[in-house]
Image (cartoon, rainbow over all chains, first blue to last red; front, side):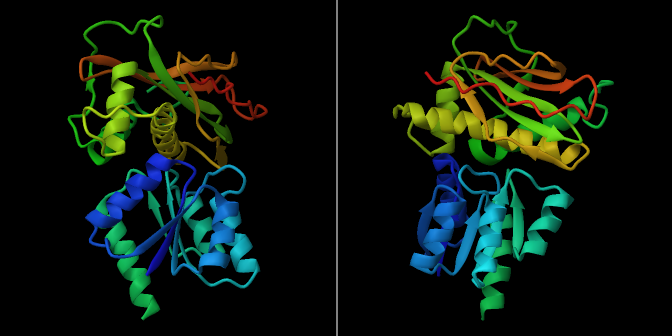
Length: 123
Length: 168
């Protein structure tokens, strides 16, 4: 699987990569984006299987990136990794077509549960 | 608990900080009651995020230089003798406020928006209409660490821009 990690924080991208490894998902090809606009561009140019995206980013937010992708016909699996895990945010993420929302601080178990569900749905 | 932030209790803030530390720093978390009062003249790093909307406030974190370096090393899994780059310090200290602030936002009435973090290499001055309503004075690795929640006196005011970013 190819996974795109979108977060304006390099520190958080590194933590996500480390957590993926700790969750038993070390073998995937990982690519990175620093904001939503770059994530949209890399979904189009790199065709990842899954996007793990922060919500609040400069240039373009994660939810705007997801809406842009869906409006253009992309069905790429998309999950949020964000510090904002309110019911309102979860509902908005789901309404836009996100598969899951993992709230920071997160655990490897939370990643494993979310990714296993997404990969299972891909067959 | 205070009258200005009734939705948020001191215990909630302590729990959030402990969760961040146990998850990302993998170290004994900050403890209450610093050995010495916070000295605003001490070299420190500060970061803050603003919440604007149905609830209006700012969440700010102040930590000593050595604590900021240790936090950055832990978050980036660096060795103890590695010196983090300045941009990594800004990034890690900002992410600390972002995580705590995002979780605070989930505990207070919405809808509201969360700003991107601002980071300073000195204490950040709060906008004049905001006053501290919750303050955690903690100790981590022998240095003071402070988490503040500042709120406006009444709700429904126009959003306030976060303080200007101040880089070292």
